[in-house]
Amino acid sequence: MTVTTTAQAPTTDLGTAVQLAYEGGWFTICERSWLVPGRGVAALLPDGRQVAVFADRAGRAYAIDNRDPFTGAYVLSRGLLGSADGRPFVASPLLKQRFDLATGACLDDDEVTVEAFTLREL
Image 1 (tube, one colour):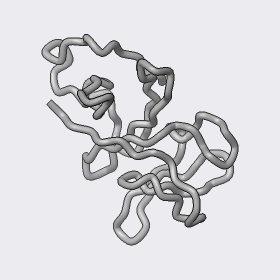
Image 2 (cartoon, rainbow, N blue to C red):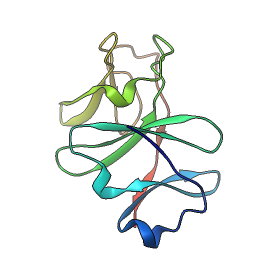
Image 3 (tube, rainbow, N blue to C red):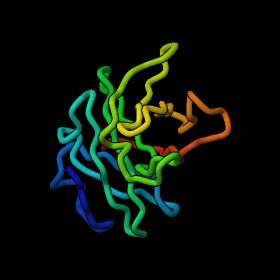
Image 4 (tube, rainbow, N blue to C red):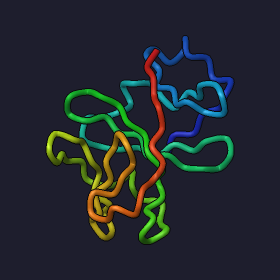
């Protein structure tokens, strides 16, 4: 599911909203209830970039770039969630590289990262 919102979306209509730090402010991604633990969604930012937004099974929300740096495909939101040494990750659905949800670091290649975004809930 791709969620597209506008920067002017009122948070009062969304209940508990998930917002992403964006261009010196906050961009509303979706209502918190839209995030299913263990599954991801893709969201489109106003500049055309895609982010993959996840809720882990403990209820924490994360956002990273949706583009898989190994294939160039925008698929990380469709990856499988897991944890390694207590750190949540998403495994790319294509080549299975794992990306730390908090930092964006690839757990299988020290030289590769994806952008990790700061989220807040209102």
